[in-house]
Image 1 (cartoon, rainbow, N blue to C red):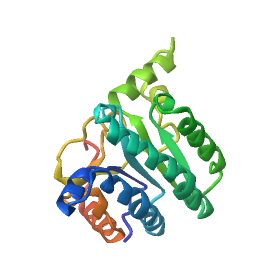
Image 2 (image 1 turned 90 degrees about the horizontal axis):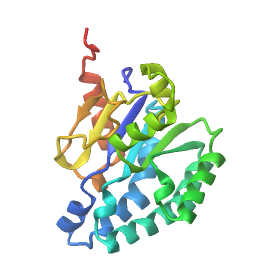
Image 3 (image 1 turned 120 degrees about the vertical axis):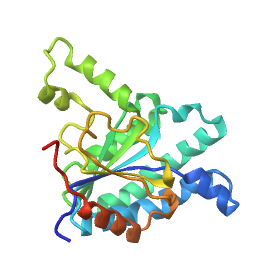
Image 4 (image 1 turned 90 degrees about the vertical axis):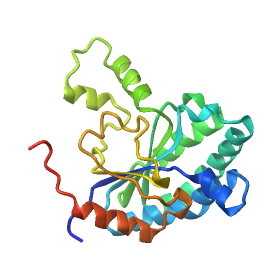
Length: 224
C-alpha cells in the first residue's frame, strides 16, 4: 500500500455502548481499550508506515459524567501510564499529550510530564493522547499564548497543542456517530473523515487496515 497517511487521528467512541451490548459494567469498555486495543493498534500503525496516531481519550466535557465513572477512568489512566506506556517506550514509541492536563490529579499530571520527557527521543512512531482536550478550548488557550503577537496562520499553528505534529490526513470516529464534536478544529481543515459502525473496543489491527484501504481510495484535492 503506497498511499499511507502520515497521521491518523481517532475519536475513541462507543466504549460504554460496547460494554452494554456485552452485558458488562460501563468501565469494561474503557479497560478493554487500555489493556488490549491501543498497544496493538500503535504497533500495527507503525508497521504500515504511519508516523503519528492520535487518540482522543478524554474530552473537556467528559468531566460531566458520573463521579464513579470519572474516578474509574482516572484509575485506568494511572495504570495505562505506568504499565502500558512503559511497554510502548521499550518498543521505541514516542509519547505526546495534548489538552489541558492541569485539571487532572497531580500524580497523573506528573506521570504524563515524565513519560513525555522519557520518550522524547524515540523514533518508531509518535502516539499522541488528547486528554482533557476540546477544540474550542485549545483555540482559546492558543490565543492566550499568542499574547500581543499579530496572529497569522503560521504562528497560530506554532502555538497549538499540536505544534510539531502534522495535521491528520484521516480522522476516524468509531461507533457510527458522524460528527467531530470539536476534535482538532484547526487541524482538521482538509482531513478525510471515516465513520465506521464498530465500537472502539473492536478496533483491531485488521480494522486499521480497513481504514488504510479506505484512505487509499480518497482523492485529496485541497480545494483545487
